[in-house]
Each structure stands twice: as structure tokens, then as C-alpha cells.
Image (cartoon, rainbow, N blue to C red):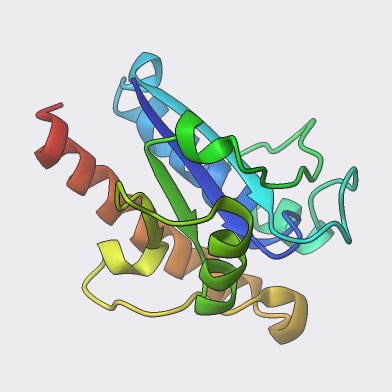
Length: 154
């Protein structure tokens, strides 16, 4: 089983969007039993809060539900529990390393590193552009799924 944890600052915009987009992709491919997918925050600011209305709206437009998701915090033990810990920007990676420690198994990545356009995914909390964030996340998730297929011969 491949275990993926998507991570952003508050776990209400980008990381839950990535979590549910990836769950939708693997479900459509019939690969659901082969994956465990979740998301978490590097900060404590939004812990216990539901997914941001803009993210919920964008996912709903795509026919994806995120019902029942509430922000949780990344913890040190997540390094051992997951195969891929995927941040959305370099600030996330910095905070992930602060919480998790070293990355000897090279599990920490940026989501867009799995696309043809490596870089950061803008935070729609600040930009207000949930459409752009969704497009970037979808591209990154498709790339990550292709990467896992090649690595694990799924």
C-alpha cells in the first residue's frame, strides 16, 4: 500500500484539495485499495476547522466531496507512517523538516515536482484564485500518480 500525506500551512485549502483530488484519481483508476491518502497542516492555526469554503466549492464543481474533513496537524511520527510527504511550497517544506527532522529516505517533496512545471502551488487563502490552485494540484496529483505507477509497477 502506498501512503501519501499532503501538507500545507493550515490544512484547509491546498492540502485537503490535493487529498481529495488524489483520492478521486485513484478511485477512477480502480486503485483505491492500494492507497492511503490524507492531509495535514504545519501550523496549529486551523486545527479542527473544516475545509475552506473556496476549496469546498471548487471540489464540488469537479464532482468531488470533502465532507467530514477537519484540519489536523503534522506530527513527527508521520514520517515513518507515510511513503510520500508532499508540501505545496518551500515554506511548507521548511516547516515539515522542522517538525519531522531529517529526510534520510527522501520522502519529502513539492507536489509540482512531479509535473512538467516544478515549483510552488500558490495559496488561495491569499490569492483568492481557487481555480488556479485546483489546476496546479490536479497536474501535480496526476504526475505523482504516474510516478508511483512507474516506481511500484501499478
